Image 1 (cartoon, rainbow, N blue to C red):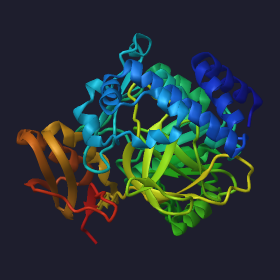
Image 2 (cartoon, rainbow, N blue to C red):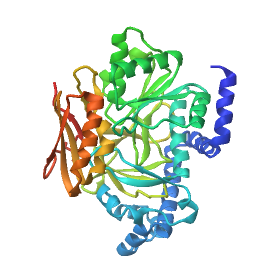
Image 3 (tube, one colour):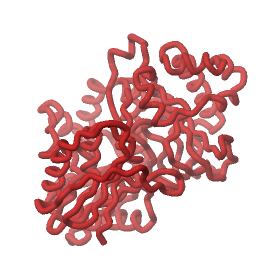
Image 4 (tube, rainbow, N blue to C red):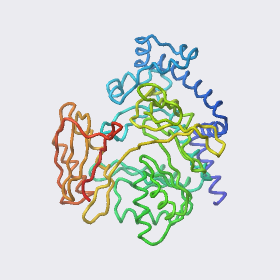
Length: 448
């Protein structure tokens, strides 16, 4: 890598994201501390979050008063934390305004965001610049585990919101910064032969790029590149959002001549766990999240499966304390051979997303419809089902009025992405099928 380019990228981050670099330095120091040291520090951060929530977040202040809890109780007896009620997506939606901090210092830096609706129920929430600095720092930490350096190319085969005709472009300043730091993107919501060829050509011009993508998207792209007959050399691939199966890892690694790093994250919590260069399991991101593994509301021993209950430690703008993310797995007993002290996590079930098939446009990432569905009105759950090459059915569990006129926007987006012959229909249902752990697939293709 050109040393000048490396220095320019580092200098730009120093000017525009100095706080992020400070957070990264903290994470790099933390990773080599022992499990006991990291656990002790995490307990301190959790206590500070509880104090803050009690002072500045109306939902938690009222909840703590109602159940007779005070953050000082946690200092005296950390096990009392398990007596706090869970926060579910429904509760977060119902109490949205009361979950936002009243702290004037943070209210000036609120960032509105929402979940992708994996369970069919998008949830809006707030984040702030402190959380965002840690979010970016965790990304860089994980890439550095592969030997990546500032100035080296980085790319996202990721989702862009499509509203009928496409997504908005980036500002000129944003494009300039991307060129300096070596960052570029491709739209994962619309995977066509043309878009994949364009992206492949970009990667060929940027050797040793580190790429982030959804599992099935990267796997589909790897199949395309393999069929194309010209392998592309990447530095590393980071996958997330879905289970990574061994056959997927092997194909991606072989086609791009690089290691594949599996990771586990969510929009509302951020980075939860990731593989290091030993590829021997997922390290919990101890600065970002406190992980409980429960069965029947009680902690299970390490090595046994349970449901994840998560507490984000860096987003005080909209605290998620004992949040039920609707995923499951287990803490691993054996530490990683790399020497990092963070405990290991095994995710039993991740998110399942289907591709839609088309007559002449290849496979299309089915989630392109997802950002448009909440605009229809009051929806409790939904599922987007491809019944045939010409038919999409949107199944909805209503939670109030639905504006059926807006279905035309969704149909227009489907025609743009899947073909002009596609018709979209609406179907109201009382419930939707769930997976064994209570989740359900929000995008399903029945086309074989």
